Length: 219
Ligand SMILES: [Zn+2]
Image (cartoon, rainbow, N blue to C red; front, top):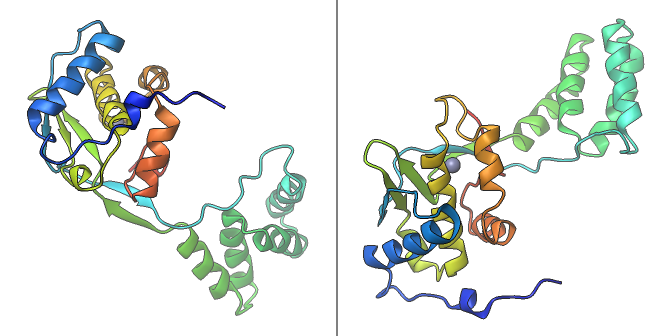
Protein backbone atom coordinates (compact mmCIF):
# COMPACT_ATOMS: atom_id res chain seq x y z
CA UNK A 1 0.00 0.00 0.00
CA UNK A 2 1.33 3.41 -0.83
CA UNK A 3 1.71 6.25 1.60
CA UNK A 4 -0.67 9.15 1.15
CA UNK A 5 0.77 12.62 1.18
CA UNK A 6 -1.47 14.59 3.55
CA UNK A 7 -0.84 17.82 1.65
CA UNK A 8 -2.61 16.27 -1.31
CA UNK A 9 -5.67 15.55 0.76
CA UNK A 10 -6.45 19.23 1.28
CA UNK A 11 -9.45 20.16 -0.75
CA UNK A 12 -9.72 23.73 -1.86
CA UNK A 13 -12.81 25.84 -1.40
CA UNK A 14 -14.27 27.89 -4.22
CA UNK A 15 -13.00 31.19 -2.81
CA UNK A 16 -9.46 29.97 -3.38
CA UNK A 17 -10.32 28.61 -6.76
CA UNK A 18 -9.41 31.60 -8.86
CA UNK A 19 -6.95 31.84 -11.71
CA UNK A 20 -4.19 32.94 -9.35
CA UNK A 21 -4.62 29.70 -7.47
CA UNK A 22 -4.35 27.71 -10.70
CA UNK A 23 -1.26 29.68 -11.68
CA UNK A 24 0.35 28.80 -8.37
CA UNK A 25 -0.33 25.09 -8.88
CA UNK A 26 0.92 25.30 -12.46
CA UNK A 27 4.08 27.02 -11.23
CA UNK A 28 4.70 24.14 -8.83
CA UNK A 29 4.13 21.46 -11.47
CA UNK A 30 6.30 23.33 -13.98
CA UNK A 31 9.17 23.71 -11.53
CA UNK A 32 9.03 20.17 -10.16
CA UNK A 33 8.54 18.20 -13.37
CA UNK A 34 9.53 20.44 -16.28
CA UNK A 35 12.42 22.53 -14.89
CA UNK A 36 10.32 25.66 -15.55
CA UNK A 37 10.47 25.05 -19.29
CA UNK A 38 6.70 25.36 -19.79
CA UNK A 39 5.50 28.80 -20.88
CA UNK A 40 1.77 28.72 -20.36
CA UNK A 41 -1.02 30.26 -18.34
CA UNK A 42 -3.85 28.40 -16.61
CA UNK A 43 -7.41 29.67 -16.36
CA UNK A 44 -10.79 28.41 -15.25
CA UNK A 45 -12.78 28.07 -18.44
CA UNK A 46 -15.04 25.45 -19.98
CA UNK A 47 -12.79 23.64 -22.47
CA UNK A 48 -13.75 24.30 -26.07
CA UNK A 49 -14.41 21.23 -28.15
CA UNK A 50 -15.64 17.80 -27.14
CA UNK A 51 -14.37 14.25 -27.13
CA UNK A 52 -16.13 10.98 -27.71
CA UNK A 53 -16.79 9.17 -24.41
CA UNK A 54 -17.61 5.50 -24.21
CA UNK A 55 -20.77 4.97 -22.14
CA UNK A 56 -21.28 1.25 -22.65
CA UNK A 57 -19.68 -1.64 -20.81
CA UNK A 58 -16.60 -2.61 -22.81
CA UNK A 59 -16.77 -6.35 -21.99
CA UNK A 60 -13.76 -8.66 -21.95
CA UNK A 61 -10.69 -8.30 -24.18
CA UNK A 62 -9.89 -11.73 -25.59
CA UNK A 63 -6.10 -11.75 -25.45
CA UNK A 64 -3.98 -14.93 -25.30
CA UNK A 65 -4.49 -16.48 -21.88
CA UNK A 66 -8.19 -15.62 -21.69
CA UNK A 67 -10.23 -18.82 -21.55
CA UNK A 68 -12.26 -17.77 -24.61
CA UNK A 69 -9.32 -16.59 -26.69
CA UNK A 70 -8.97 -19.86 -28.62
CA UNK A 71 -12.75 -20.09 -29.13
CA UNK A 72 -12.90 -16.65 -30.71
CA UNK A 73 -9.80 -17.31 -32.83
CA UNK A 74 -11.34 -20.57 -34.07
CA UNK A 75 -14.56 -18.71 -34.94
CA UNK A 76 -12.60 -16.16 -36.98
CA UNK A 77 -10.75 -18.95 -38.81
CA UNK A 78 -14.07 -20.65 -39.58
CA UNK A 79 -15.50 -17.39 -40.97
CA UNK A 80 -12.42 -16.86 -43.14
CA UNK A 81 -12.78 -20.39 -44.53
CA UNK A 82 -16.49 -19.98 -45.15
CA UNK A 83 -17.57 -22.40 -42.40
CA UNK A 84 -20.14 -19.98 -41.07
CA UNK A 85 -22.39 -22.56 -39.39
CA UNK A 86 -19.46 -23.75 -37.31
CA UNK A 87 -18.53 -20.21 -36.32
CA UNK A 88 -21.99 -19.36 -34.99
CA UNK A 89 -21.98 -21.53 -31.82
CA UNK A 90 -18.42 -20.39 -31.06
CA UNK A 91 -19.43 -16.76 -31.34
CA UNK A 92 -22.50 -17.44 -29.21
CA UNK A 93 -20.23 -18.71 -26.46
CA UNK A 94 -18.13 -15.53 -26.57
CA UNK A 95 -21.19 -13.27 -26.88
CA UNK A 96 -22.64 -14.91 -23.75
CA UNK A 97 -19.48 -13.73 -21.96
CA UNK A 98 -20.30 -10.18 -23.14
CA UNK A 99 -17.65 -10.01 -25.87
CA UNK A 100 -18.65 -7.09 -28.12
CA UNK A 101 -16.94 -8.11 -31.38
CA UNK A 102 -18.51 -11.56 -31.19
CA UNK A 103 -21.96 -9.95 -30.94
CA UNK A 104 -21.25 -7.87 -34.04
CA UNK A 105 -20.02 -10.85 -36.08
CA UNK A 106 -22.91 -12.94 -34.84
CA UNK A 107 -25.46 -10.35 -35.90
CA UNK A 108 -24.00 -10.39 -39.43
CA UNK A 109 -23.94 -14.19 -39.69
CA UNK A 110 -27.45 -14.63 -38.28
CA UNK A 111 -28.85 -11.95 -40.56
CA UNK A 112 -27.30 -13.72 -43.53
CA UNK A 113 -29.09 -16.97 -42.75
CA UNK A 114 -32.37 -15.17 -41.98
CA UNK A 115 -32.25 -15.80 -38.25
CA UNK A 116 -34.30 -13.10 -36.51
CA UNK A 117 -32.03 -13.16 -33.46
CA UNK A 118 -29.55 -11.02 -35.41
CA UNK A 119 -31.36 -7.88 -34.30
CA UNK A 120 -30.95 -8.73 -30.65
CA UNK A 121 -27.17 -9.05 -31.05
CA UNK A 122 -26.93 -5.89 -33.15
CA UNK A 123 -28.85 -3.98 -30.48
CA UNK A 124 -26.64 -5.33 -27.72
CA UNK A 125 -23.48 -4.47 -29.66
CA UNK A 126 -24.67 -0.91 -30.24
CA UNK A 127 -25.56 -0.44 -26.60
CA UNK A 128 -22.22 -1.80 -25.51
CA UNK A 129 -20.23 0.41 -27.85
CA UNK A 130 -22.36 3.54 -27.39
CA UNK A 131 -20.53 6.83 -27.14
CA UNK A 132 -21.55 10.37 -26.30
CA UNK A 133 -19.82 13.66 -26.97
CA UNK A 134 -18.45 15.02 -23.72
CA UNK A 135 -16.54 18.08 -22.56
CA UNK A 136 -13.14 17.18 -21.10
CA UNK A 137 -11.97 18.37 -17.68
CA UNK A 138 -9.12 20.34 -19.22
CA UNK A 139 -7.51 21.25 -22.50
CA UNK A 140 -4.56 23.13 -23.96
CA UNK A 141 -4.77 25.85 -26.62
CA UNK A 142 -1.40 25.98 -28.40
CA UNK A 143 -2.14 29.30 -30.14
CA UNK A 144 -2.36 31.19 -26.87
CA UNK A 145 -0.35 28.77 -24.68
CA UNK A 146 -3.33 28.55 -22.38
CA UNK A 147 -4.49 25.68 -20.23
CA UNK A 148 -8.24 25.73 -19.55
CA UNK A 149 -9.52 23.86 -16.50
CA UNK A 150 -13.26 23.17 -16.32
CA UNK A 151 -14.85 25.50 -13.73
CA UNK A 152 -17.22 22.71 -12.67
CA UNK A 153 -14.24 21.18 -10.85
CA UNK A 154 -14.55 24.06 -8.39
CA UNK A 155 -17.99 22.84 -7.37
CA UNK A 156 -16.91 19.24 -6.97
CA UNK A 157 -14.44 19.68 -4.11
CA UNK A 158 -11.79 18.46 -6.49
CA UNK A 159 -8.68 17.24 -4.67
CA UNK A 160 -5.53 19.18 -5.52
CA UNK A 161 -3.77 16.10 -6.84
CA UNK A 162 -6.43 15.90 -9.59
CA UNK A 163 -5.89 19.52 -10.65
CA UNK A 164 -2.13 18.96 -10.61
CA UNK A 165 -2.52 15.88 -12.78
CA UNK A 166 -4.61 17.84 -15.30
CA UNK A 167 -2.06 20.66 -15.38
CA UNK A 168 0.75 18.14 -15.86
CA UNK A 169 -1.12 16.44 -18.72
CA UNK A 170 -1.76 19.74 -20.49
CA UNK A 171 1.88 20.79 -20.01
CA UNK A 172 2.84 17.63 -21.91
CA UNK A 173 0.79 18.94 -24.84
CA UNK A 174 3.06 21.98 -25.03
CA UNK A 175 6.16 19.84 -24.62
CA UNK A 176 5.31 17.28 -27.30
CA UNK A 177 3.93 18.50 -30.58
CA UNK A 178 1.02 16.30 -31.59
CA UNK A 179 0.02 15.56 -35.14
CA UNK A 180 -3.56 16.72 -35.73
CA UNK A 181 -5.12 13.31 -35.90
CA UNK A 182 -3.25 11.73 -32.98
CA UNK A 183 -3.86 13.69 -29.78
CA UNK A 184 -1.66 11.47 -27.62
CA UNK A 185 1.22 10.02 -29.68
CA UNK A 186 3.70 7.56 -28.06
CA UNK A 187 6.24 10.27 -27.23
CA UNK A 188 3.49 12.19 -25.43
CA UNK A 189 2.44 9.10 -23.50
CA UNK A 190 6.01 8.53 -22.33
CA UNK A 191 5.84 11.84 -20.51
CA UNK A 192 2.22 11.51 -19.53
CA UNK A 193 2.75 8.21 -17.72
CA UNK A 194 5.10 9.95 -15.30
CA UNK A 195 2.33 12.28 -14.09
CA UNK A 196 2.05 12.46 -10.31
CA UNK A 197 -0.86 10.43 -8.88
CA UNK A 198 -1.93 9.54 -12.39
CA UNK A 199 -4.09 6.50 -11.64
CA UNK A 200 -5.79 8.08 -8.64
CA UNK A 201 -6.54 11.24 -10.60
CA UNK A 202 -7.91 9.36 -13.60
CA UNK A 203 -10.08 7.19 -11.37
CA UNK A 204 -11.45 10.28 -9.62
CA UNK A 205 -12.24 12.06 -12.91
CA UNK A 206 -13.89 8.96 -14.36
CA UNK A 207 -16.01 8.54 -11.24
CA UNK A 208 -17.28 12.09 -11.76
CA UNK A 209 -18.16 11.25 -15.37
CA UNK A 210 -15.38 13.20 -17.06
CA UNK A 211 -13.89 11.66 -20.18
CA UNK A 212 -10.23 10.74 -19.78
CA UNK A 213 -7.63 9.37 -22.15
CA UNK A 214 -8.52 5.92 -20.80
CA UNK A 215 -12.19 6.20 -21.72
CA UNK A 216 -12.24 8.22 -24.91
CA UNK A 217 -11.98 7.06 -28.46
CA UNK A 218 -9.80 8.73 -31.00
CA UNK A 219 -12.23 10.34 -33.47
ZN1 LIG B 1 -4.56 15.40 -23.81
